[in-house]
Length: 101
Image 1 (cartoon, rainbow, N blue to C red):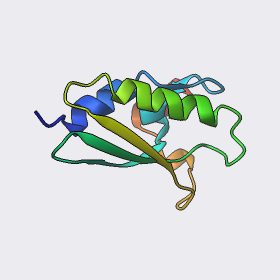
Image 2: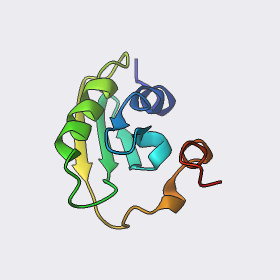
Image 3: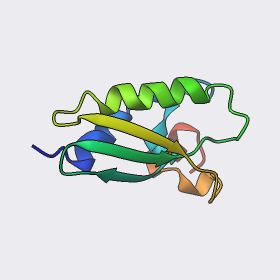
Image 4: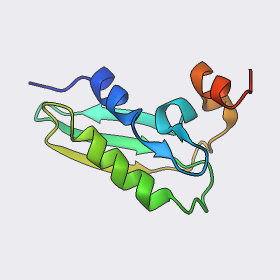
């Protein structure tokens, strides 16, 4: 069974940026996701800042929670910096949590 992007995205909502207190999906940190036929997942994501002190924790939690989805066989997380993160990448829910709406 090939895992769905929707189920993985839902699992990633359990990964919270500890400094901001909002999950990485609503923060808009996940840029791209690729799922192969054998269940290998590649996630391209960024941090709110290149100097993010919680980057290692967020990456490890991203791998851990993505692997909880049935059919996921492996997870590769690739940090990218272009385009840089900005508040416009946040979901409506994320903006509401920070009172940006």
